[in-house]
Image: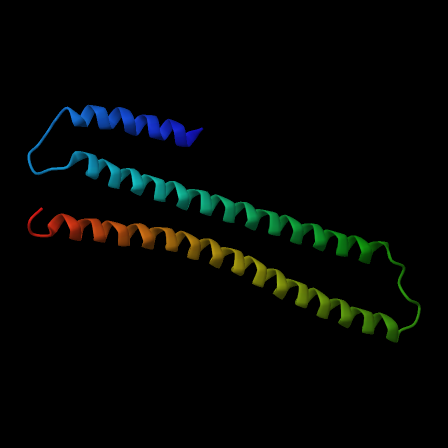
Length: 141
């Protein structure tokens, strides 16, 4: 829905600007470049939103897992032997640390992916703008 609304706005704007013809200035090409810029920004926003949603979901999953672990610790009956709880405690701490490290890696991976995807979109659009500018500055145009 947003995309068609944006296109209709550009069509209206193009018609309005088209009334003002200036020699040596291709308004249609200029408007097309700006339209592509806005589409790139929209793609960046979509990528960022998807990354944030994924990050939120991962954090919710981590919280759920942690709460389940805490609940299982509270509901299990302690062992009566003295050495057994110490071994279980060490093992529980080791598992918790391993899970925390794994969770941190997942979060950083999600953030990195989102940032690199957004950077790729921006880089592509900047390269296109540079090529457009080179074409405009060529002698004989």
